[in-house]
Structure formats: C-alpha cells, structure tokens
Image: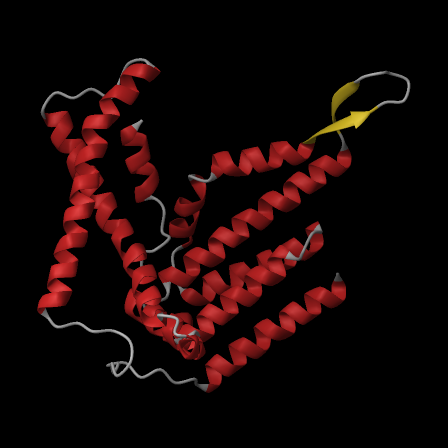
Length: 269
C-alpha cells in the first residue's frame, strides 16, 4: 500500500515545473494565473457535453502550444482513474421511482450516462489545466505572480507575501517529499520490511514508514526556516524582486482570448 502510494505521488505533476522555452513558458505568471482562473470558471459553469468538448479542444491546443509531452499529462491523469470511475458511476446510477411499484429501483438511464461522461470529462480538464499552470511556471514566478495579483489586499493588512511564499513552498515540497518517501521505502525494504499480507498487516507495516517521513518533513521545514533566518530574509514591505514582471502584447492577447472565450461559452449556454 505504501509502495502504491509512492508510485501514485511520483506520477502526479501538480507542483512540478517542466523547463522549456515555449510560448506559455514565456508568458507573465499573472496572465497565466488569470487565464487558468477564467478557463476553470468557464468550465465549472459548463454543464453540457458539447460545451465540455469545446473546452477539451482548447485544452488540447494549450498542451500543444506548451510543448510538454502528452505522456506527462496522461501520467498525471491515470492515477485519478478511481475518482473518474466514482464520478461516472454516481451520475450513471440514479434512483428512480416507478409508479406501478411501491419501492425504489436502481436504474441506468440515458441521461445518467450523459451526465456521467460530462462531469467526468470536466473533472479531467480541471486537473489538466491545473497541471499545465505548474508545469509551465516555476515556483519563483508563481510566488511573484500571486503576490502581485493580491498586492491590493496589503491595504487591509493582509500578509500577501507570506501567504504566497507558503503556497509556493508547499508546492515545492511535493517532489522533495516524494523522493524522501521513495528513499524511506527502499531503506525499510532493505531491512526486511514486508509490504505484502492482509490489509491489517499492510496497515501495521505502513507505520514504520510514515513516521520517518513526517520526521523528515518537519526537519526539512526547520532547516529551511533556519536558512532563511540566517540569510536575514524579511518578506513583505520594502523587499525588492530580481525578476521584474511586465505584461507584453502576448499576455494581453491571451487574457482577451480567455475572456472572449468565457463570454462565448455563456452565450452558448
């Protein structure tokens, strides 16, 4: 079970950055954040299969423009298969009332199949859009973009910089913890630990592997805090940035396209 969990995490690309020089990689992180938010909002308000397919075509275009191998996206999706099956099954199996019978029956109806396919595709597209954002945006760019977008909230004494830093560090720690989990698993297996047996035995064998992972995560967080303090790191007001963000014509064009796309979806809806 622990081994399966490690394999599951290794195939998830959320929080990982794929270096490149594509059109999407060169965009301002703020425009990518806003575009992702617009497309996800439009997708959430789309409840028919034809609108979902339109979003799917746009998502495929974005994947093509990003020049990210499609197998990386597919690898991220395959471990959500159980969630897709649950979503599909919930909408396919509907409880209906038959007038001539005084009880409920579980039937598979045509509208259930259509709803199951629609909601499953929508969930998959949401995962793809979220993965594309992190794959084409480095953690530093993501931090700068979030901080600049929410900078007006500083007037209300909201620690925008600290919140953006916490979010980015959380994403950055995902691949580190995955590597650490793999190392702990191999170390435990070399000491004779077993991952086979009944469900109860597997749960018991997980504990010696999970506890070192928690200890390692806390130790890494403490080391990071000490390193930031040793370098006199002070976020917030008065802190400059090495990378200066600036919108270009491409950023404006992408935002106009995404806004027009969402408006068109609402009109079609």
